Every structure is written in C-alpha cells, then in structure tokens.
Image 1: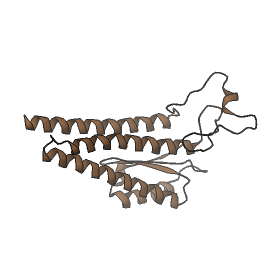
Image 2: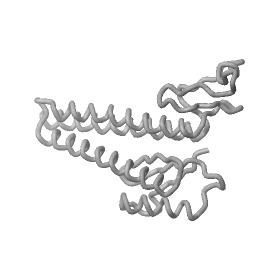
Image 3: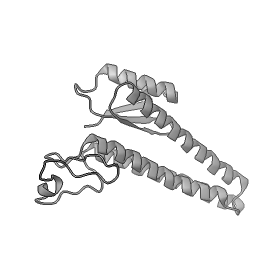
Image 4: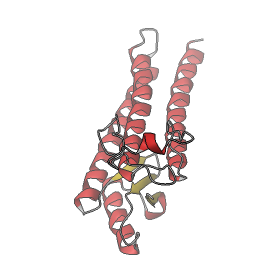
Length: 193
C-alpha cells in the first residue's frame, strides 16, 4: 500500500511537470507561427491599436511599446518578455506541486527525495537558461530566450538585420554547448520573426 502511494505521488509530480513543459513548448510553437495567446484582433480595431499620434498601446506586462503591424502581430520584444513570463509561471506551478509533495508529512522518504531532486533540477535549468541568455546578449544579439529540457535546448534569438548566418548559429551553439554540455544535434536555434 505504501509503495502504491509513493508511486502515485511520483507519477502525479512527473505528470504535472511534463504538462507544464508541454504547455510551454506548445505556446512557443504557437508564437513562432504568429499566434499569441491572449491577443485578439477586433474588427475595425485599428483606431484602438494605434493612437492619434501613431504610437502603439503600452504593454501592461513590461511597459514596452507593443506597436501593432498591419497583420496584427506585435514587436519581438513583447514575444521575449511573454515567453519568459510563461516559462516562469509554468515552473512556479510545477515548483509549488513539488514543494507540496516534499512537505507532505505522509510521504515516505524516497518520494521526498525525488521531489527535492526535481526542485534542484528545475533550479539548475533556471540558472543555466539565465546564463545562456545573458552570454548571448553580451555577444551583441538584441534579445533571446532559452528553453532547457532534460536532453535538449531551444534558443530563440531576436531577428537579425541580415538574417541568421552560419557564424551566428555557431557562436550561439558554442555558448550553449559550454554552458550545458549538450551536443550540437541537441541544440535548436530559432530566429524570431
């Protein structure tokens, strides 16, 4: 009976973490395709999106200028702040579940140890992603966001004036390999549009 409870708790934790990772990945795929969750276009809304003086509406999340283009998309700066926010919210949700499991008085020691190990793994991912993002922007790229998984990473870099070259991809790949120990075939570099 004890073994069944422990396995059920561990399975629930893994399920929630996988769900959070999937939702984060799914959102990243939607925004790459030009879809932004929570973004709506109203019929005849051009006057709502653009003020009389031509400036866009202020983005509530970061105070950035989210000037809408003809197709209704927003500036890439909004994508990066939204992606970071969604990544953090998914991690916070998973972290609260893991902390709850680790703090459960009825849980056995192995379940507590598994939850604590998962918490430390998520903390490591967060630190590594921040280091990668900082190093890439230090190399002169306007903005980027990294999504680190167990055996792969996706790095989204802001659009470059002349497009991403092989040199850019190699430079970013080198930073990622140094920080994560992953191989080149485990790294996906995407240029935001």
